[in-house]
Image (cartoon, rainbow, N blue to C red; front, side):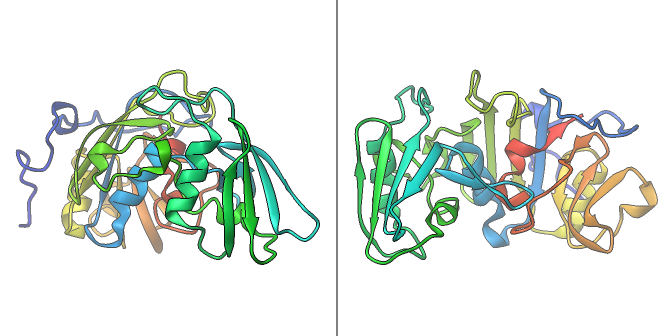
Length: 281
C-alpha cells in the first residue's frame, strides 16, 4: 500500500475532511478548540499510551520541564524515615461516569496496579480525600513513582482493558475506540484543568503502520501530527514543524499545531500527554 485508502483510513466525517491550508506562525499561547488528529505506528503502544493519558489522571505528574507537580494529589508529606506517606486529594473531581473521586478509588487503583520501584505494605483511605501509603522500606522518591503511566486512577480501581470502556478523570472522555487501530475522545467541560490543559475539542489517534503512509496522511491534511523517524517527503513542502528537529525526529506537525515551549522527553508523544498539552492554533 503506497497510497492512502481514504475511505478506510478514518471512520469519522470530521477526520475524513481535509484540513485547510496551513500557514503563519503558531500562536505563542494555547488556544481552545478544534480537533487534534495524531497518526502513530502500530508498534510501541503509542496509541494506548496517548489515549490513556487523555482519559486517566495520576496522583502526580512530571511537567514538560521535568519538575514534579500534583495532578489528583494537591500535596503530600512523609514521616522522617520516608516510609509513611500521606497524600491530600483534589476535591470536587468527577469521573466521566459522574461519580466523585474519593481516596477509596485511589487506594484501590494503587493496590490493584502495584507501585513499581517501591515495597508497599499498605495503601489506605483516610476519609474521603486523604490517602495513606505505608512502605516496607524507605523511599523518598515515591511521589515521582506515582506519576508513572501504570498508576492511573479509576473508579474502585477498575481499569478495563478495552479503551472503549475506559472511565477516568482526565481531560477527555472516550467516544469510541478500536484496540490497536483507532481512538476518539471529546473534551470534558468544566474540567479541573480547564484553562491550563485539554485545549482541543476532540482528540483522534489513528494507527498507520507504514511511516511513509503516515507522512502522506500528514502531508495531505488527514492528520495534524505524525510520529515519524525522518522528514522524508515533507521537507520540500516547507510547512511542517519537526520535534525535536528535522535531523533527530520523533514527531512532525503541521504549522497550525501549537507546541508547548517545553516538551517532555521520556517518550515520543510528549511523555504520552500530547492530547492534553498540544493545541490547534
